[in-house]
Image 1 (cartoon, helix red, strand yellow):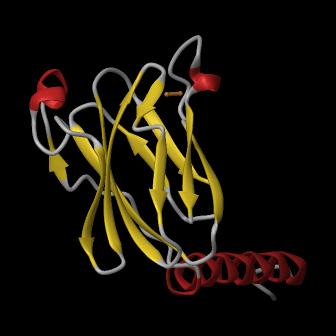
Image 2 (image 1 turned 180 degrees about the vertical axis):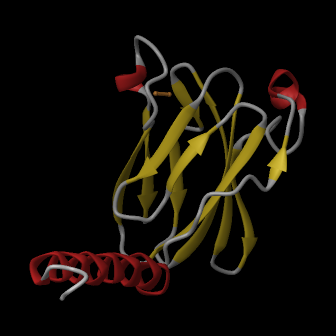
Amino acid sequence: MEMIHRYERFFLGSTLVILAIGLVAVISSFFVNDLELPSPVETIDPAELASTPPFDNPGVFQVGENEYDAVITAQSWAFVPGVIQVPAGSKVNFKIGSVDVVHGLIVHGTNVNLTIIPGQVAEATATFDEPGEFLFVCSEYCGILHHNMAGRVIVN
Ligand code: CUA
């Protein structure tokens, strides 16, 4: 006498195969698509953010031959600075902190997708090989003018 009906065995088997495919897809995406888990690299007092370096002087700073730090503060409802200009081929390290509530940062055309939690510095890096304009938007609902919270990376 069979312990498990063969249909039952078939569905158990298919479930394991589907789970295995899902696991392989998630793990391989770390390597194929440079997926990164977000992790807070630094904590910061949101009330003191505007007077704490580097956020006391937001902007774009050259730190290497083709490398820039984009230091950005997020506040309701704007990114400061709202326009980031770099030459084509630049690697840009986004460093961003919030002075008030939770915001987000998605840079179109890149893998940058951050949650900006007050008290934490969010960081991500993207390389802009082609000239063009890349919209960035706030991706966490942060109040009545959330939809206005956007900016542009201009690659020359
Ligand atoms: Cu900031 Cu939505």
